[in-house]
Length: 386
Image (cartoon, rainbow, N blue to C red):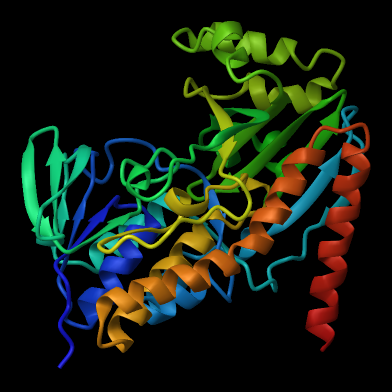
C-alpha cells in the first residue's frame, strides 16, 4: 500500500494550486501556505497563453479543462507589429484558431482556488524559514507562528523562493532588461482608437533601443510594458512611482520622437505604473536531491518572459510531480524521478528565453521581431493544413 508524505506547498500561484488540486482529486492531502491575506489582495498580472502540451495538459489532469474553456479567450490571440511612426509592419488578426488561447492570470487562479476546499489554503502565511527536525521532517516558521511537521515541502514560491536555499545557493540574476508596466481601463468604451490600434491580441513596437508591448486582457483592459535595457536600479532612480502623473510624463519622455498615436497608450494609462526588472536563474540550474525538499516553477527555473513558458512550465512541473507521487510506491523515489526529468525538460525553453532576452533591443531587434511574427504565422498555417 502506498504511503503518502505529509505535504506542504509554499505558494498559491498556478503551479502550487495545480499540484494541490491534482493531489486532492486523488485523495492525497496537502496544505498550501500563501503570504497574501486573500485571493484578491494584490494584482495577479496580465494575460497568459496556455500551451496544449503543458498548461492545458496540467488542467486536463486536474479535471478542470471545461472550466478552462469557460475563461479562455481564443479570440484574443492576434499579433501586430508597428514601427515608431505608427506604420503597421505585420498583422495576424485571424489567430483565433491557434491552440494557445489567452487567459487572465486572475481568472486562472480563481478557477484553481474554486476547485479546492477552503481549508486547503492557509492565507496570511509569509514563510520565514524551513527548519529541519532531527527525524528528517520539517517545521515551517511563518511570521505568525510555526506549523509542522511535514515530510515533503514543495517550494512553489516564485523567483525569490524561501525554500530554494535548502537545496541550491543560486539566486536569480538581473537580465539587463526592465519592464515598466502600465494599464488602460475600459478601453473599448473610453478609448476606442486605442482599442482599434491594439486589436484582438497584442502589439509590439520597437525602435531606438527600447520597445512597447501592449496586450488585451479580459474585461476591456489593456496591459502594457515599456521595455528598456538599463541597470537594475535605473527605474527606481528615474521614476517617482508614488506620483503616477509624474511617472507617466517621464515614461512618455523616454519615447520622444515616437508618433503621438503610439504614445497615447501611455498617456491614457491609469495610475498603476510599476517597475518589473527581469531576473533569471542560470540555464541548466539543478541541485542534489535532498529528501523532503523540492521546487517547481519559478522557484526552480525562473526565466525571462519572452518565451511565454513560465506559467506553462510551472503547471507542467505540478502535473509531473503529482504523477510521480501518485504512481510510485516510494514518495522519496518519486521526487527524485520528478527532479531528474524536470531538469532535462526545462533546458530548451530556458535556453530560448535566455536567447530572446539577450537579443531584445539589439540593433536588429525590430527585424528579429518581424521574423518571429512571420515564423509563428507560418507554423500555425502549416499546422492548420496538416
